[in-house]
Image (tube, rainbow, N blue to C red; front, side, top):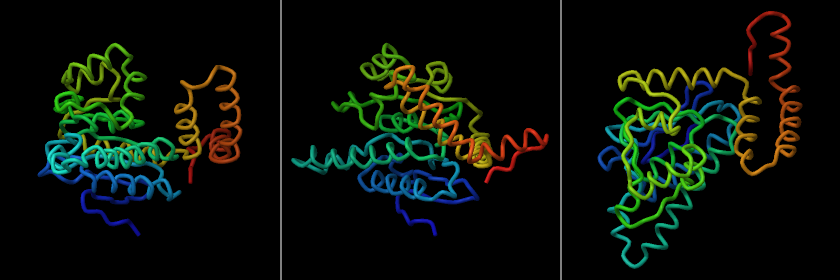
Amino acid sequence: MSPEFRTLKFERDGGVARITLNRPDAANGLNQEMSAELARAAAACDGDPSVRAVLLTATGRFFTAGGDVKEMADHGDRIGVEIKKLADDLHRAVSIFARMNAPLIIAVNGVAAGAGVSIVAAGDLVLAADSATFTMAYTNVGLSPDGSSSYTLPRLMGLRRTQEFMFLNRRLSAAEALEWGLVTRVVPAEELAGEATALAQRIAAGPADSHGAIKRLLVQTFANGLETQMELEAREIARSAVGDGREGITAFVEKRAPKFT
C-alpha cells in the first residue's frame, strides 16, 4: 500500500516508484511539510525491495523554486531553528536517495532554483526539458546552499564553475546545464514525461544488484584511494555475481536476453 502525502504524489507502476512534487500554486516550494514528506517517500522507496527505479518530477511550470521563502518569513525569531528542521529533512531525503539500491531518475520539467538544483544534482540520471532553467539563488535572499549542493556540484561541474554558479547566481539554460555536467540529457519539453518513464522502466527491468553496487562504488570514489576502491570493486562484483550476475552470465552463455528479477 502506497503512503499518503499532501504535497507530493506517490505512485507505483511495477518496479518504478514515481514521486511528483505537487505544490504548483507555490512554485513547488519546499516548505517543511514537503521536505518531511520527501524524506518519507525516499524511505518508502528504500524500504521496498520491489522498487527498482525511482522517478522524481514535478507538476506545473516549476520543478521547484527551492525553499518556501514565505514560510520562512513567518517563522520570526525561530527562523534559524525552523530552517534547520527543513534542511535536516531535505538532507535525510538526499542521503536515502544516495544510499538506496534503486537509481534515482529526475525529470526536470521547468525552473529548478535553490534546493531544486541540489535535488537535481543528487540524481543518478537527470533528464531536462529543453525549456528548463537552473539557478542557485541562495545569495539573493542572504542564505547559503543546502541539500548537498556544496558536495555534489564541485564534483559534477568543477570548483570554478560551482563558484560562479553559487556566488553570481548565474542562470543556466538546459543546454548549458548539460555542458556543465549538471544533467544527463536534454529532451524536448513535450517528450520529457515519456522519455523519463521509458528510462525508469528500462532501469527497473535491469539488474538491481548491479545498479546498487554502482551507486555504492560511486558515492565512495572521491573519498578512497586506488587500492581501497579496487578492493570495494572486487567485493561488489563478487556479491553481484551470486545475485543478478548469475542470470546475466547464464543468459550470455545461452545467447538469450537476461531476465532480472
